[in-house]
Length: 417
Ligand SMILES: NC(=O)c1ccc[n+]([C@@H]2O[C@H](COP(=O)([O-])OP(=O)(O)OC[C@H]3O[C@@H](n4cnc5c(N)ncnc54)[C@H](OP(=O)(O)O)[C@@H]3O)[C@@H](O)[C@H]2O)c1
Image (cartoon, helix red, strand yellow):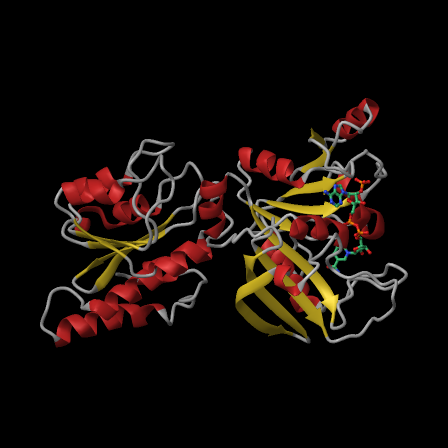
């Protein structure tokens, strides 16, 4: 593999070019020491780690498709790499095969998702792998999509040696939005908030900008750039007048801007809200009910804002399950709910959250009137509280970033099982 390939290494767990040769060397050393033409078991994990790093580095670029990485290995060396660049573009395996050319014959392919077996926007990868003469395939996880699955079987039938794993857990984590959407038809929901240590998201007078520091906010923006849609309630629009764009620390926009969704059941938000400004990049959607007057629909549409009429819940507000169904149907795989407390309360009360990102600032706000991050009904008993698992804790500047997956919710939905 030449330096041009090294130069293509992109961020991920194995992110820097200096780490990349480690993978190559590990494979070479093992192959050489044992006098074998193929690396032994530990190299499989290393080569798959490289494929996973490629997939991770391109998160947010492929929706509604999964993010997939692939490496081709021959004689213990990476001879080609590929990743899926965008929906409609060649899959990761095809990119790697094209780069390797005739060298692919007899090589081993490491790919983070089972090669597809169907004619979608691109031809089946399993067939291309067979035609290229690849000898072995390691895929991290089966494809959950019933339309595309069956690639492993087809490869095996053609005489290719096929292995499931290693790297299944990480592969599923990288594409958790995709897996959830295939299983439920709804977007994967991440609830995000910034709070003081005493659990307040604003002061008693409504001031909330900024509770956390620049590093925590940058992390929040990076997440915005990876999700398909971002949602707030009418209360947050009134209080903070956000733009909900995904911005880097220098103020520049990320290339991917998520769909902005605002819950406004009756169409009472001011038309001069920043969210409705026609020059904003991307697209804004107002989720509402039949209570929104027709004239308001016309005014919003004239501003380039889409309105979506959904059933109302018993309080006359937008019904969250109907909203998730509608977003899922239009190909939204991931939804970042940024608040405020009433909206997050609705999502938690109905067991509609899969993951939580909390940023906790070393500050005490206090005050009975200062709001907390999650309102709604809440849990009447601790046994019915939403519990998180697989926690990650990281200090960002002065703030703690706490991430966790929802294990159980008041509705008893074990969302991440
Ligand atoms: N620190 C943070 O991370 C953070 C983030 C966001 C917001 N905030 C703060 O949170 C405060 C605003 O929160 P909030 O609780 O007052 O308002 P909110 O949750 O932003 O919005 C609530 C409103 O959304 C509408 N809505 C429509 N369907 C709904 C549903 N199914 N469930 C809930 N709401 C629905 C309702 O208004 P209609 O009936 O008119 O439709 C409702 O009153 C502000 O102080 C803001 O600064 C803090």
